[in-house]
Amino acid sequence: MRTIELNKRQEQILQIVKGDGPITGEQIAEKLDLTRATLRPDLAILTMAGYLEARPRVGYFYTGKTSSQLIAEKLRKLKVRDFQSIPVVVNTNVSVYDAICTMFLEDVGTLFVVDESAVLVGVLSRKDLLRASIGKQELTSVPVNIIMTRMPNITICRKEDYIIDVAITLIEKQIDALPVVKETEKGFEVIGRVTKTNMTSILVNLTEDEIL
Ligand code: ADP
Image 1 (cartoon, protein in one colour):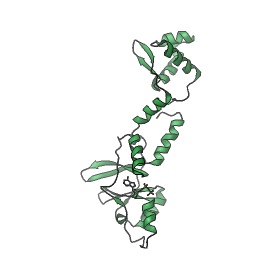
Image 2: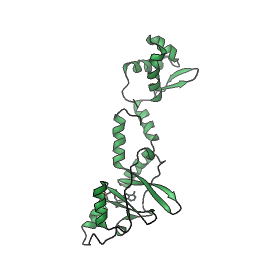
Image 3: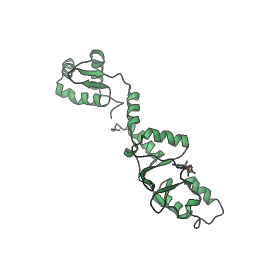
């Protein structure tokens, strides 16, 4: 979405609508000495971006919203399902050693632990595994369920939740990731993960003129 940089003609249109709105596309075209067809893409962009509002049979209004208000509005609408990543899960009886290998191989910072019915039972962070590694135990014989953070203390989210709520939760709970879950009769099935990396890519998208 082009929230930040408008071209010269779009700026001119905004000024006209700001001063003379409500005004029809035809009238704007006249003022700029252009055809209605030439203006159509610019009007579409300004309307989609939220600077202008179009009312049938009345014309265009200036919404008075600033770029940052428009960005905030877009951000508040983003859902988990549009940004979630694939989850990496391990079984509850794998060893701490194998969990560490999985974390390296899969290149993730958080593993979700599931039971034999694929139901979420725990979370393993990098520091959970580091902590276990500096103890005296034999890492190949300690199962992850001894050291994981377990249900019901796991913070979860669902794919239809808002990304901004997940971001707030990550900060409040001081954690790096949430499992995206689906409720089944046995418990929560893990269908995705949302991490601080997902949040960083949203920030980058914002600067890249992409439709959020
Ligand atoms: P690290 O421990 O590597 O800094 P986190 O900040 O994500 O990584 O984890 C901090 C602690 O919170 C760990 O003990 C971890 O098991 C736990 N944890 C991580 N994610 C969750 C979650 N979604 N729900 C509950 N606890 C979690």
